[in-house]
Image 1 (cartoon, rainbow, N blue to C red):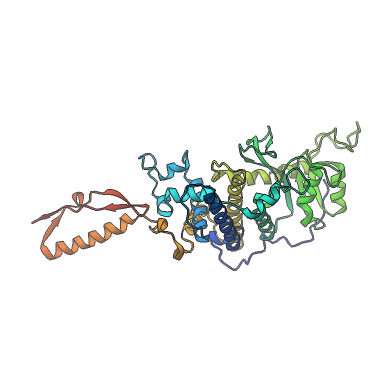
Image 2: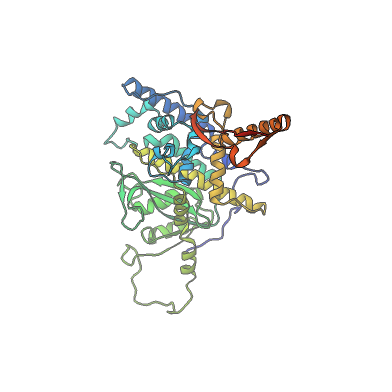
Length: 435
């Protein structure tokens, strides 16, 4: 293990610790209004292009407030699981979930899912013509968003001294050239990401999406380049990085040492440059400080993966880039939650649980920009039946007082249900007997 004393401040982040941040504000550090406006513009272009090509899906222009509500419904689907998306709007007794219908009709939700697009459709074709050349961008369909997500991960959090690097798999069945298979991972097929995380809490500090075998720019191999690319913003600052044996090499560790960067990792004895000797000066029962620290700090990416999978919003989709869009939403939520925990620790107050943080975020997303609410979302989030019953009960009490009527509470309410404006409305049937 190579180590250096850290020379930079280790405050938990770059936020104002005297300010109260809501879950929505922390989520908007990644999905800001400008980012969402770009997504809306490109989605509207894509939808109009498909309609011009003869698609019959009903469409009305998508606005930022509506896209935030769409994100809110997606996140709620990670909290309440159903086998298929349409089950959230099902009238079957085993489902009967009122919340999604109070935000969107099923038709509108499916229309947004069908049309959502990240890159500018006017320039997609230009990149497609470069396929097979060095100038072709495999991630062009994601480029406007992926750059913003990476910038947000880097900008709003200053990690502790210990960092870890590992691979992360984002599940997909898409037929695309850079889908990977990793038999040692729980998710064996999918997109492979090289992830830099804060070892203490699993915050995603940076990541790169692997797009297939390419010529190494340094000539030192993919594992070496992946580490250096992720650590470039931190080199020379005394951080410590923990990696597994796929990354560990003498060339990498020597380079990091020169750049005043600590490194610790397991190694392969057959790795090029590994010293070959039969003599081990370390006593067999000696305390391995490096082993203890490796076991303590190597699991940062695994911890991050666990947080992402607890309430993962991944849905089946026909487009490969939408799978990564859903993953980036999860990253924004988890990073926001970890920022919330650090803010609470600074103020010495109890933080929200991960589940409660997501619940509040869903509520704030679906209420965002209420003045722009669509007709399908005009019904309130809470059940309208409660207000109706209270009003009718007050009117009934007045009637009893003025006309000497007798009411039996066990008989006065018989709830029925009907569909109105995309939501459930409960009608109270009052049974009154005259004295």
